[in-house]
Image 1 (cartoon, helix red, strand yellow):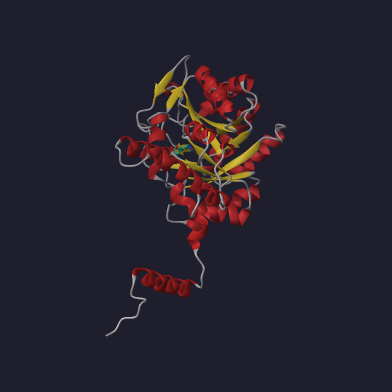
Image 2 (image 1 turned 90 degrees about the vertical axis):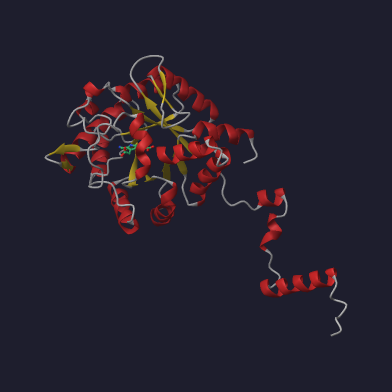
Length: 351
Ligand code: PBG
């Protein structure tokens, strides 16, 4: 059979190209991807330092900087060191810190009563940071788990986590945290009615401008392990938290649960853990339109660090990709142990 002159390389290429043009109707998604300037021009979401909240761990004492084995690069700090860290974070432009205390074992009891001590470690930390670095925001977790002898977020009696007594306790604890200068109260316990109770207690105490960020959808996740080492609850916890945290299988229930927090007066919502729950992030943002945050939790952090240390992944690029994913999913910000590292990279540019 006599072949036509189009059976040359150039001819075949032209034929293939026109096939593709026919297929796509001359639309070519790759056109905007050709150059760096064009990729920058068409980029839809951006991660900036303004999106970062840095969770830190505090211990009693002075001049203590204690590495956390399960969280490479993260330390427990005494209050004086936490103040230095706050100053560094403010200099990097990080808007806010979230503080978590590791209190002495002899201060922990069945009911987490030490949360009611006005000068407990978390409140000391807030006062010291507010005095030295007044420009940085302080978000305090008002859960009982750092203060209970059993590591649960609620008052435990006869094998049951008591909802209503726990709510009263944390609402009172929230007022002490606000008295100490906390800007945002963030309850992470998942008791029913806690958002409304905290709002009422704050308002009754004159703290109208103290906001409530609800850990609205907190799932019974396997990703909290390193955090429990960090605050010393891993050895204490008996059983699990499935009678109060959300089942990882349930998205509709998560949206209903967050809806109650919105009705009760939450100013901001949080999804926790982060990356496995991006569908929830998107749903909450689209449904309620509140400022929405993801908590990239300890296990998520440590997995990236471990993969990087083993040489399996480029930890820096994986970190930045995952943080950006939260923005794409509709989050306004991310609580992340990577905050200073990411802030430094963002300041260098090129991300
Ligand atoms: C509990 C609490 C948890 C975290 C913060 N506060 C979870 C838990 O121990 O059940 C986890 C944070 C992390 O893993 O980074 N109130």
